[in-house]
Image (cartoon, rainbow, N blue to C red; front, side, top):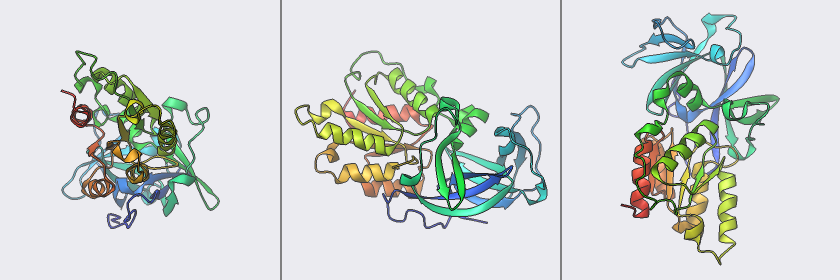
Amino acid sequence: MSITNSNILLESGTNELEVLVFIVAGNSYGINVAKITELMQAQPYQPMPLSHPCVEGIFQPRDQVYTIIDLAKYLQLPPSEDSEKDIYIITSFNKANMAFHVHAVEGIHRISWESIEKPDSIIYGGDEGVVTGIAKTGESIISILDFEKITFDIAPQTGIDVSTVKVASDDVRSNCPILAAEDSALLRKMLIDSLTRAGYTHIIMKSNGEEAWEFLNAAKDHPEVPLREQVMLLITDIEMPKMDGHRLTKLVKSDPVLHEIPVVMFSSLIDEDMYKKGEELGAEAQLSKPEIANLVSVIDEILGIK
């Protein structure tokens, strides 16, 4: 079943997403439809010796080889009671192709990011947690999983490699305040580590677009301090509870004062369609999350740092 023709977010900046709700061991979870290429019935695969315990193996449905991740095993939940009915969620993000093995698929729900709550850090594991948002559809509670963290835990090469960032040899970047919005605790830490390594030590980190928007409005309300001294550039993820990156960018670029702030979208979802949406909204640059060294170069270029 292909879902590439989904009509989600045809109008950019609506602060909505479509979530595929799936079941693992009787529990309901969600994944952004934008990460999915298709759904397939579980089928035979080739085991991979010495691979991660949560990797079942690989299979090649057509001309593409996919790594199969047993989501139940990763989440430390019981295996399927009827594996013949199981489903593979085929995904493509962060320039990696993965098949996530789940037990059933419930359907697709269109949800406003505003209705997705930030998970409780105590209940959901804090920085080590794998849930980035909690949504309710009807009587069901849906846990939106951090698939970037899952893939990084299993295949670290899919994540940000801080070591690729050149260590700063001067302090020219230290006085450049950068606002960043990112909901994943793991990626927040990697982003801070990478930018700090490059010399960007004045980072204001927020966990979603709403928090970033509130900060920008507070900055605007203090005209006695030049805006450039409060925020020189905004880095934003796309997927975030309460307010996504597209909505945040739309609000910033529509504001008579804040529109001068350059916006860089840094997301696992950057593909041709997403890139067009970002352009329509006025983003100065868009990069996929593994490209951390390129992110530093882009920021340098935008801010005129040589």
